[in-house]
Length: 493
Image 1 (spheres, helix red, strand yellow):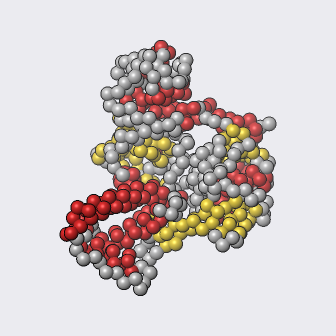
Image 2 (cartoon, rainbow, N blue to C red):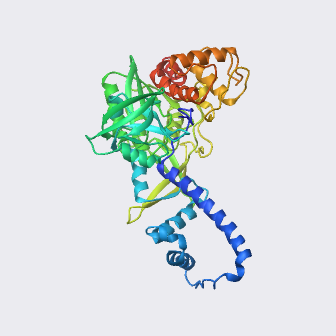
Image 3 (tube, rainbow, N blue to C red):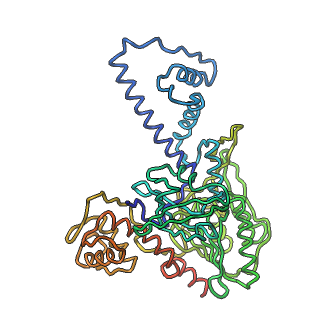
């Protein structure tokens, strides 16, 4: 199998509604283009055979829309294969209206998509507790195993490839279908065959409630570490629990990790800010369509035992997590470490409908407490610290049968060299030229992972290299995380 994405920590989390929105947009645009082409072609070739045009009474705003839906429902040939065609047509009309407005954060969600969206923010579901992405050949690769989850308890590891679920090969399935097979009732068992470094590892995992959007621990002495995954409805309580525990153990220094945090609810932002800043501190400014503005302030409850705080961010730190970063940076002089954040500075609200669907739309732009815009700009850390270059490399796919060897040059060779270097193999260069040191490193790597003996880079070797990057990162993070190391250096000065 072949891996599509090796930028492990630097691909922004995409909410289910954004995924659905992008998919619908692609389908909608393709359909529109095809319809235009066909209308010109058929009109020119068979114009004399066209029937009498539909007569539309323009007395109402939406008369044309009603007429089109009514006509297609009754006469469109391909409509015979579509269940509830009127609803289907109406949903497509709504999605087309939204998809062409240029705002990827405004979308129409079906009832099922509303549930998925809320679950994504709240991390509230029954399952095994993993986050994954799809590889190029259609298999999901575990990117993160959540703390205190069934997956962690049963030994699932980042980099594992979900291969077979309850006896069914999941190759090519939609992510929603894979998720539905993995999820289930609490206490039931799901049998999953994972591919780990090319070897099948079977796990019989008992499903449980996965509802953790934060994780905290004491790293050493009086230094605490708080990672916030999302800003869900229970996140403030989770964070307060970890911080209270640290306070009881005399922790006075805190590293807050907001890397890969795509945001969530703004009231959660206010709740978390209230634990870290004095009461009535401005943490957000919102500007509305009519030019009016509104400020949000902390509510009280600050934990004053934390005298030194450092924040970690990356290119996936977005929305509410950017608001929190800006508030702590501007209002308390807290240092920020990492790379520039995503730059999502808009606020969305949801208008639900009786059938469970909803319109999620942008209502405002938020600014930092000092009035600085973030949308499309992001937040620049006080200390720019990058991870190993392999985390920033573009996606590369090797076709079956394609190989590279000594004296050849290719981007896939460059990726392999970066991966080998990251994994501790000795290579003299990482520019894509397959030199003798690369030959020796490939030979040793293939031997270490029981791959077929060869001096060449092929599909299998690149796939194993890519998944091993993820596993090696998570199992050796303390030594590899240069951003965390810089934060600890600053906080202990």
